[in-house]
Image (tube, rainbow over all chains, first blue to last red; front, side):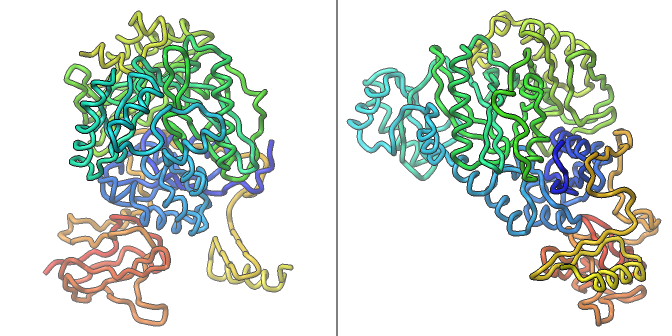
Length: 452
Length: 154
C-alpha cells in the first residue's frame, strides 16, 4: 500500500450526477474529504449528502455554474481544497481551466495543460500519433484547394472518400464520394457550403469507411513516465453520435491486432507526457484495420466496462496519478477477464424520437445479484432536472463470456424499474434480444438503420 | 528549520481565538496547523466515512444559514449572495460595518463585500428598506444564493 503522505486531503468535484457520485465514492475509499459543487437546479441532488461539504455555485444554466470557472475556483478557495476533479464533459477537457488551477496552486486531476493541448487538438494529436506509430486516417495533409488535387489525394487513399469542412462539425459540410465523378461534382459545392456555414471554405479529404466499428483504447499514464493500456471498448451501438451501449472486450476482434494498436496508444500517451486517464478512439474497418479518430483527455462515461474486465479502478487511478503516485502495475499485470456490457439509461422516450422525459421518479427499483453494477445518482423521489443531459444512470454487467453477459443484462434489465418518466430501458431490452447484436460486430450506423 | 517558539505562539493564538485551521506561508516555509480534529490526517489506513443514507428530497446545503429562522414568511426580503466567496461586513478591518441592523438602505447601497480570488466585490442591496437582520459573520465563507441579510421593505 503506497504511503499516503502526499495524498490529497480534500478534493473538489466540479461535476454533477452519476460521475460526481462516482468520484465521491473513489475519494471516500481513499480517505479523501470531498467537496461537491452544485447549481440551484441540483439543490436536491441526493449524492450531495455523501460529500463532506456541498457548495452552491450558481443558478441552473451550466454557463453560470458547472462551466463557470471563477465560481468553481472561488468554491475551491473557500473550501481550501488540494485538488479538483473535473469528471467528464463540462471543464474536463479545457486546458485553460487546467492552467488556471495550476496558477491557483490547486491540482487539476487530469493531464497538464500542455499534454491536453498536444493530444486534444486533432492536428497535433495526429502528429504525435504518427510518431508513436498509432494508425491514423489516410487523408490530405492540409486543405484542398483545387479539384485536381482532390482527385489525386482520393486516388492515393482509395474510394470511397469523405470531404469534410476543416472548421466544421456536427456532421455538417460532409460529403461522401464513391468515385471520381462524384468527387469532382462535390468538391466545389463542399467548399461553398463550408464557407457559408462556418465562414471558412477549407475542406480536406479522408478515407471513408462504409461499415466502421468504434473501438477505443483505454490508457493510463503517470507523472513518472509510465503508461499502460487497459485494452479496448467497442462502442459501435450509437445514435446521433451518442453512445448507447458499450462493451469490453470488442467481439470478434483478433487479439494480436488489439495488442498492437493498444500498445501504440500507450506509447502515444507516454510520448505526450500525459498523466491521467486517456482514451484513444479509433474507427475499425471490415478488415480490422484501425484509424485514429481522436484522443479524449479525460475519464469517460463508459469507464466501468474496462474496470470490470481488468479489475483496475480508473477513477481512483486518476486521483492517485494526479497526487504523484506511480502506476502500481506493469503492462504484463493487466489482463482481460470475462466480458462486460454497459447500457446507458437515459430519461428519453424511445417511441417519441427520444424526446427528453424530465420529471419526478416515483418508482425506482435497481437490479442486483452477481455481476451487476448500477452507477446512478437517482433515488426514489428524485426530480430529473431539464437543464442537463438526459443520462440518469448506467447499468453494467460482467460475466465469464459475452453470451453470459448478454444473458445477465437481459436479467438485470428485467429487474430495473424506473417510472413514471420514460427511459431507454425498452430500447435496451430490444437490443439484448437482437440477433445481430448477439452475433457481435455491428457497425456505427446499425442502430440508426434499425430505428428507421 | 521551523522555529519552535514561533509554533508555540501560533498554537497559543489558535487556542485563544478558538481557531481550528491556521495556514501561513512566506518565501521560506509553509505552516499548516489543524486543531481539534479527531484522528491523524496522514495515515496508511484510509478512513471511510459512515455516510448518511442517500435519500431524496434532500437539502444538502447545511452552510446556508437557513437555521436562523428568518424567512420571507415574515414579510422580510433576503439579500442573497450573487457569488461564491468570503463575506466581509466592513470595507476593511479597521472600519465600521457597511450596514447594521436598523439602517435604511436603497437598492444601490453597498451592504458588504464578498471576496473571491483576492478580488473584493461590493455587493449592492438590490432592494430598499431597513436592515432587519444580518445572517452571516465577517470572514465566513458564503455560497451562491446564500442569504446574507434580511430587509424590512419600505
